[in-house]
Length: 529
Figure (cartoon, rainbow, N blue to C red):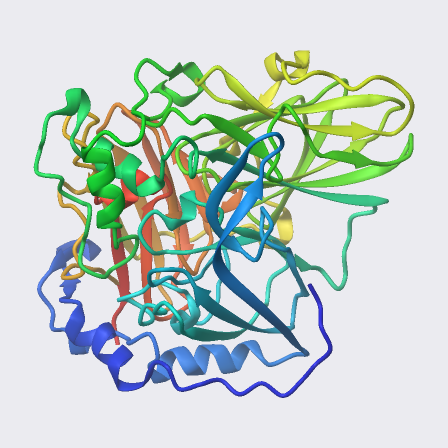
């Protein structure tokens, strides 16, 4: 959304308290031998989110035209297409209204919190100033109920992004929306653009809430009580469980949402933890899908965003090939495919040459035997039904590891200065998801230094797949592979990715399964002063 420029004064909401959060609130870690990372150093050794280093990095980004936006997080009723639910959303729509800016702009967004609890806003995929990253207890104070917060930062890189809270499991309600950053020198030629947001939905259905789902999952498989660990991890990221919802779940006032037996060879086995009653494209169920209209022969750019909490989606457009042009906002060498697999938090841009007729865009909830649906209409014809499964879903499928970064954004060859090993641990049995055997705590962070080439070595020691997301940076997959901020790590596998430490501050690194993250599978990277 674009609005006319107006004077915007940012309130002093961070100040000394945030400096304390960046230092004293979080204990720290220091360099170990051989460039690895191990705990020890004092908090003062690390860059604070509102420190001079962060301000200097933002100054280098420059300040372009200001785009002013106001959003309200509020309780509302949403029609999903034949099913109306009570939920939380940005305004009265799902997804929230798209925010669209141009690379080089300054985004000034005021978030008004009309929810019954504190919230925040994280800008997924953006390399922005650290004190605007939206992680309460790390980069900002929580935005209390009835209060507002002014986010203001330079937006430097074009691409497909999105935003959502980083508070508890709020993201698995209706609190999400696309952020599209246009390229002022757009190299692609296309006639129309279709932003497609995928989601799995549980909130407000038969009394269910994401907090109640977390309460059930946290007991572990078979309903055994393993201490409920991970429901509240003390202010470092996705925390703040609603105790009302927890008590309701314990009292059996909402149906069980624990999923067992969902498997997918593409995901290496177990497909997910949560049995969602609905799967959505742009806020609509397959029973009453959105229809996107174009003309035969139009070149359509589709921007896919997986905003789900626990579901990978396999997407295909019936009777069409897709040409992949970008992933996670960064260009790739163009590659043709029938289908794509998106983990939670991932984005892909594709081009399609629209044929004449009505075609299903099907998003299969991978391993869960259900699907979301939207329609592309360019001419006459009857619409495919809710159960449409185009043959392309079983055709050629591209995953991120098969893509090459566009030459202009490819990481240059360089040996890593530091390797950070992240062993992904835990199980469904105890629901004790963690990194390096330790559930998230604000007392730990892994050090990096400005200017370093850092290798993140994800070692998945679990029987579950994990979409791992790094805040404030993009990393490169091996061998000149795609630039990403979120990547799937399959069970029993290792994934090495590299990034350049060029954005100082404290940055979350976590699984983007919202229930895994909230249960402990997240950590912090901290820049040394």
